[in-house]
Length: 219
Image (cartoon, rainbow, N blue to C red; front, side, top):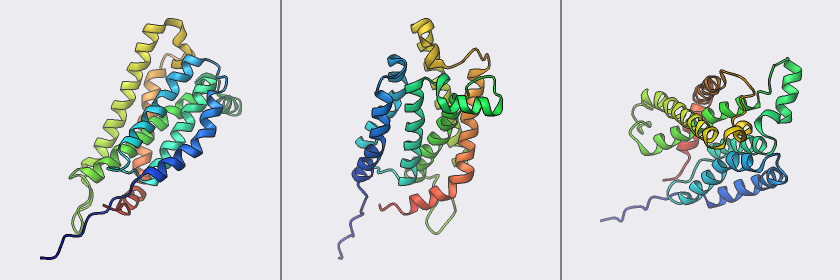
């Protein structure tokens, strides 16, 4: 009897080292004299925890480079928000002047990414580990795949809003920079709306590209 051909998998160590090397200058800049150190820690914590998780599963579940690029961009958005605080990021101030907005809307970019990137992350996990992914030689991905990805992204956004609320309760006025509401009473609702928009945009415009990226993954 012929021996079974071993299934090969791609170790994600090299990709994660490249990710870290490209992010390190941004991280160092962000950490250098941020406006509020506590706010900085709150904003960069997801970057540190997420990178640690990716390193922990790199041998069993190496992420596609497409997803790593999305995660890198999201990390840059968070690091910039942590350095300046979301209400004072220069990009938001420039847009405020150009478009005549009444507030700095950089935080909305952050929440758009908060839906965009988790939707791609969840989609990749489900494509590779669940029956919802396409079957070779058969049907395509399940119609439930997009619904579940958007639902998880929204759930993550809601969880983040609860964390913000808890931080405000514990820290009092000191949490204003972290919340970034800037006196806008519908801040929480519009944050979640931007996360929803980000998730839908990710699935509509990058779904097929992600299918091809996953198909190229060995194992």
